[in-house]
Length: 244
Length: 106
Image (cartoon, rainbow over all chains, first blue to last red; front, top):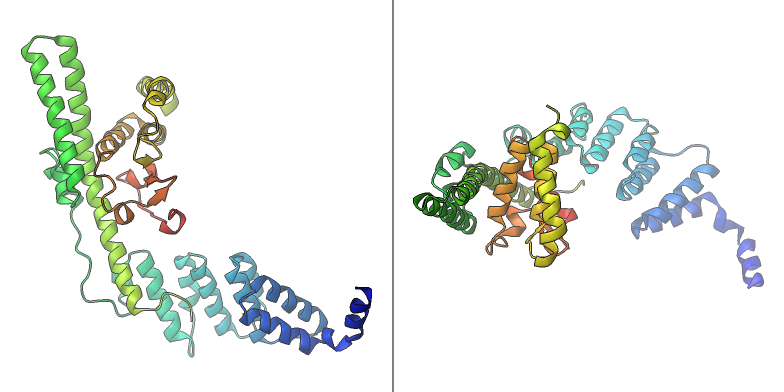
């Protein structure tokens, strides 16, 4: 074992910067970002200066590893301000911060401007701000069909109506049965002058009826969210979701 | 009146606690949702007060039905602990819905 280690140590060219860089690039291509990052940093210790391309790869490794704040700090090493803004925008986008990414991407100029606009558009799409997104990217023709939560609440005055309006037929039927049963029970006890039982039944009926109206509004909100998600899916079929 | 001194809230929370301690164990793990309806109600009342919390709890009780699993993957956030994941935050009608589906796909 020790002989093998000695032989390896004799191969001094293995630790030469160009070979280190080659090895780091190999790891990067193999998507072993942790190891690649380690080798790139070793290379940086041995050389005096590095190119923007090398910093870009380091940033890519950090971004892939989810170390976004480190990637942002590393991007300060990029000399080209235009490129630096573009990369910062991409990092923020990858970190799920489209509003921060827009701050940088809106400053970007040629040759990155078209890709920056695409990312801004995607960012707006992820936030379901489709009108704003349309200013940056082409959107599918069929926009989402929203329903009005107010109408959901109004229709829920008839138990289950709001859920039916939102397409949740099972929930609507169940609401109708629950509220209906509680209302019938309260009438039954009222008719028999059983005041305590009537009170409980009426309380339950009111509790369920109010919840049914609330649920009508809530179901429509969730329906609209579903519509937004479907439309986003359509956008992502046309627009590549990732960063090129 | 702050939530923690509101008598209605204290009564509702105590009732839920009693339910969870004495009644719920005898029924077994039957709720379709995660968090369960009683935990949901407790959290909703804690966060949004007795009125909105009760409305949210009543709505949830009516959604916890044999048809709850219909289109759960698109309507709800996902699956957690083999149940439909439906957190309080997505059911407050004045709040913003955020469904991070990548986290609840087990």
